[in-house]
Length: 289
Image (cartoon, rainbow, N blue to C red; front, side):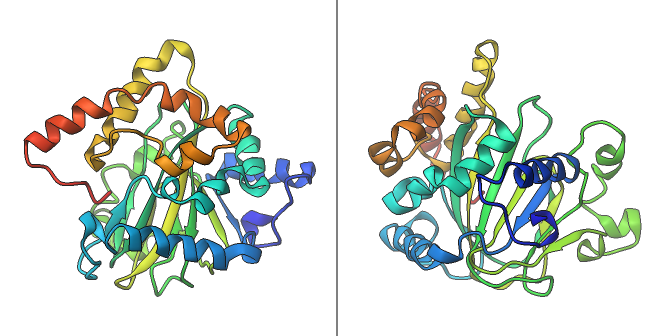
């Protein structure tokens, strides 16, 4: 199965998709080797094109290798990359894991530098979130590959709670370095996908100064009764100094099928503009993550 580094399923292969879904539900991640080998050159070209159009690094300055450069939104700024959301391989995966009415929540493009310590991308909101990550350079455990702790996304059962507050200093609590924490290392090559639940503990170690990676973040559709929570969640993205959660190229070229996955977020991102104005008045710069 794909989570075990065997060939990934086509969206039409329902049995394999169900196997992947069960693996993801249980362990919190999938590794899909070679799924985008046929178009990875176009994808890398799109990645570099977005960065070139935005000055080459964070805040419009060239990436200097001393700190992470981050750009939000990312795929939304390029028509070719925006269409990844409608690619049958991505769309089939997302509908399998999140449902036919999933939300596109945004994306980020990165030049990573050095280590990324153990962390979660989200907590238990009762809404399923996941991240699809494209790593555009060959990576393994000695060069900054993603590491995950399988099963650590489950909020109940005590395992995740046993890790919280301890992975920030694993040597003090477990007698091992961050890279020594027992984990699965997802060695990747360009064309692979890594997919993981926002709640899973993950990290990377021994990375270089220019690791290229971008993500597609999605969630289940939010019930009407929880729209104020969705508005606040989207509003937290003001730290990137963006006034709309969905970028211009994505909005411009969205197919009817894509519109279904954009509409709820686009209708509830109105807190961004005043929050950004407040941050700019304080002299704040865009967040690096």
